[in-house]
Length: 104
Length: 157
Image: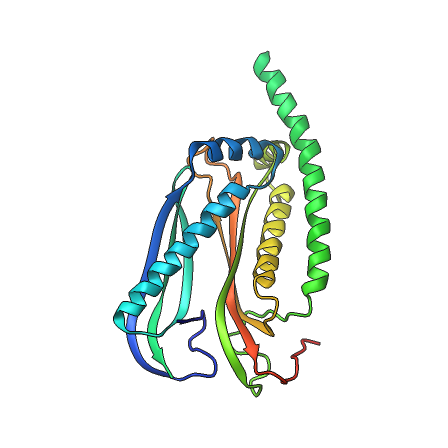
């Protein structure tokens, strides 16, 4: 599966277009992580627990999007965009979308 | 009285550790940026050298969640009162963006070029204490381009 955030896959030509595919996930960490993060808020610095959380969510959302594209019979996704929003304290929604295409 | 002592402790802790952490982070950013400067990164949609044959391309991303310390948060609150530029948040966002781009570059060390770099910022601490921005998430994503073996390296200079 080729994935890119530009309009084409360099070195290949698009033959068929299947339309938009997307993947989303809402995830949250367990309470311990949240407590740790609020302590870290006093000292400042990277919140590793949340970095990890968002990384896992993004991989999952990407996986769902790729699965959807595969189901359509596409072998590439172009013009991929990410968006993040927080729906509640400590929970994040990751949304990934792109255009499923076949390239040769 | 107890509350005041606790706040003061947090202030001192935030000031000391926040300053140390920021200095350390900037040193690490400068060192890594120097190493990774050879990997050209642009926000253009086309590679720098359009004639070079490309073997493959892939989506790459890097991200970081970073939080401000207690002292700077208070300082920013005060600044809100008088108006003007909030320096403490400027450095926070600067650090977060540079770190995210560095992580993106580190995730594809063998790439020849990264194009269409997008940087997205979101605040993830909504619903916490008040609606003040405490921590931000920065996501950087782009397309890594790998040239065919034996092709010349592009140069921004």
